[in-house]
Length: 364
Image 1 (cartoon, rainbow, N blue to C red):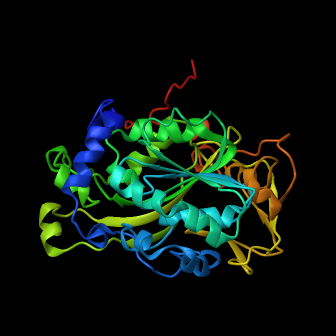
Image 2: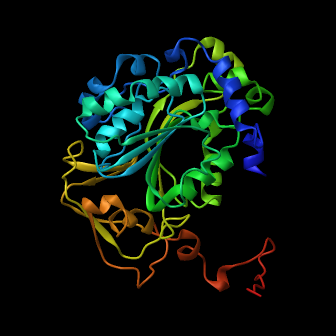
């Protein structure tokens, strides 16, 4: 199956599609919000910085929670479909004056609100020079950003709006540095939404019609070079009775995702005998490092990990500031969980067909 084609709603005419979505959205920005201020949805280090963001920016923004990973100081961050710029200006405070944030937004009216307050925001932050660039554009064409120049890409429940999700993922991959991170929140489903439903712009505009079956997202991400998508936090997505009638039997979840851009990762967790230690220095994570929804690394403890996790502590990854790696990749130990297909195989003498006759097997 061509997963990219299944979710493609436009081929090159991206701006027109985003304009149609903006026109179809409810006048009340919060009517389309799918993220919530659930515990952990807004990082602790960003909460007090929200007071520095102008009221109009916050009141015209379409989401509540914010996908902002730790250790952004000094980074170059791209905020895709940044809207009126609330997350952009939160990130601008977290990267500091030595960092940079590029906000990309297709809708001219929303971008104008972010632009309107830019000088005021920078002054509020106490910076001598502006560290925010605002660009009207679409995530599917980031040609104004140099290959491999970005540390972190974020987006807040806007990937599902994309008319060409394959192009979106490919552009994120292209602009990220080696060991860079794509960290975002969006709505996913437990099955594919029928195309006749997702083809309706009004359904996409409400952040549900364009949601991707979570396994299709994994497949597309892996095909385009993100070998190991991880899901950090999940919440049930609020759906009204009227919306539920449009999507019978479909379950929606709002998920914060972490994807590391590294050639040192693989599409299956493999064992090289590596161990990591988290030093416990992140303010929001003094007791453990939250890697994904199932895995926490206790501070100060040595943890045996797979190749996809050990990259966090390798040179070039910003998490190496708080995570150290023991070991190297000179010896390969196979599947990190043990390969049951191989280890549980019967002896040759025990392999028989339905008539209890020995099977003649060959690898050639």
